[in-house]
Amino acid sequence: MRMNNYKYAFLIVTVLAISIAGCKKEQFAINTNPNAVTASTVDFKSVLPASLSATANLQATSWTVLQKWLGFWARSGSYQSVSDEETYSFTNNFAVNMWNNLYSNATNYDFVITNANKNGAGFYEAIARIMKAQNFQMLVDLYGNVPYKEAFQGGSIRTPKYDDDQAIYADLFRELDKAIALLNDANASSLDNNKEIVTNDFVFAGNKLNWKKFANTLKLRLLMHMGNTSFAGGTETNTFIPGANQVAEMAIITAEGSGFLGAGGSAQINPGYDATKPNPYYRAYVVNELGALPGLGDQTKANAYAVGPNPGGPSQGYYQWNGDPRVDRFYGFPADPLGGTVHRGIQFGEVATSASPNLGSKLSTLNGPGLVPNGAASRAWIFTSVESLFLQAEAVRRGLLIGNAQMLYTSAVRESFVFLGLTAAAADTYIANNASYPDVDFNGVSQGAGLPAGGMYTILSQKWFALNVISPLEVYTDYRRSDIVYGRGGGFLPGPPISVNPANTKTKIPIRFFYPQNEYSFNPANALGEGTIDVFTSGGPTGRNRIFWDKN
Image (tube, rainbow, N blue to C red):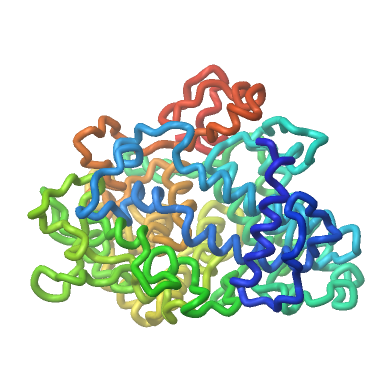
């Protein structure tokens, strides 16, 4: 991992990013030796807002491959095939930005924790602990065992050991407890001891209650990830993985009393985005600061599974199959429509010809107005109230939380519509129009022998519809911790769709990612100690290819 070699480089990059985020120039100094970065040359108060901006950028731009695997996006027919992601035949150099970005971000939060603690700035420390915990939750969900306790030790530990993924999850609960305790400590979290916290907290502007809700919601995400669901034979079976005391953890959340992120309470930022400093999603997929279509937005278009047409199946996509108006909020119409204003996608992995109707200009784009309602000046999301409400509905369904699962589920769908610029009334109409179908109706009935009914199938299915772009890692995690087949319960095509690239021989998407090659080069003993990784099976000498919560 060589954390000692790159942690300070990340600090420099992150602090310079403050200028992009719109902070005052006097908050940081650029005329310094980048090889001599210390707490005296980089102020933790400046690192926090830059780190939050980096988190928003990570959330908006790191998951292109997951968007494709889950049936939302696909390669434009104007470009040659991307064989590694379309055939699933990739190596340790594949998608390394996920590992690098998450460790980069966690490094900076660790810096804030250490130096805020030394200065008695408990509010800064609490925020950084919460955000570092979120980074490690995502690392575990992608890679399983990763360096954790020995990470960020500089030259004292050059080759950090890999910690057990379930043990990391267990420790994240305690880290979040520490954060909440700091927020409840009037002296540690006071404005006097946390100078400029209101302006440097890009997310909640120094609102302690909202940060406690964020911490509890992150705990809820961890708890739900440790729940498995099977729909075998059409029967819903919910279990929890052994070795984790979910009841005790939920009791701590309940006793704390702050609750969860609720309607209108998303963790999101807007530090001053504009045409010259665009929202990260807008910059990566819609229009960059030069006023041009970015490469990712040109190369990537809508997946036929989501928006249609589906060769050999329904001409519609899954959104239109259910009459879901969110399709127009996630996707833009083709620049060169083939008759009328309709969406058009391409099959994932299709190799198009020069005369193909699936060339880029004829496909739906990724610039849906629901994601960037104010263009370059739109807010960027970190953890949405939409996901929070779905998690709460699941917790009630699993018997961990007191409440009404159907009401929370309905609130989650309404919140999804509102978040994307639609109305709660439109969400109610959508649900009513799909009465009895379990991919939308919580009380939906099985549509055939062996097919699932409503309840948990409805919750997980609607997370697919709602968290497109916003939280694809969460959908990927749902897919792996259950045996859900999207579309099947509502009479649509089974999904997510497997690539139609002629070179593809796989029948399912990977269950995890490889460790990056740098780990084998610079931390070989610990990386190799994890055994030979197979991203499709639970085999291998350690038996730990699957993430600990992936039991299906």
